[in-house]
View 1: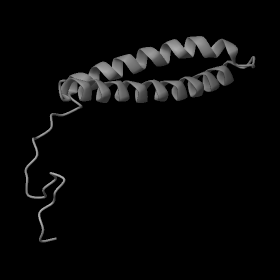
View 2: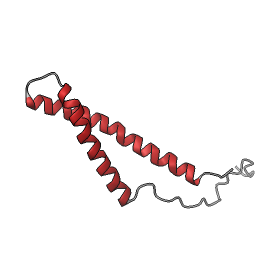
View 3: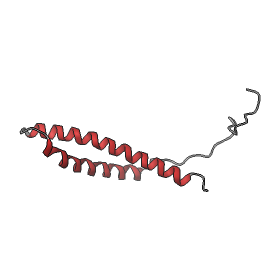
View 4: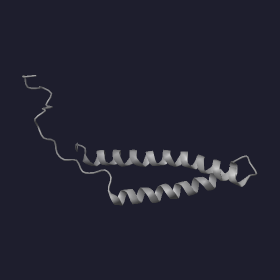
Length: 92
């Protein structure tokens, strides 16, 4: 504890403040993209629901679209984080 660390990670050193990953504009863009993707996926999956009841078609089409939209939202977040890391990473 009383010896200095040799790996360059000092507890007393201040790190640079990181910029925010989420801004109001990025939230608005994500919301619009997610809603558009949900609507598109609903039009794709709803005809494939094996039912004649319109309520069941709407229910299962919406549930499937919601699941796919969640995966889409996660991929958007991963793309944003990776792109930021590449922009701010060390240059060769």
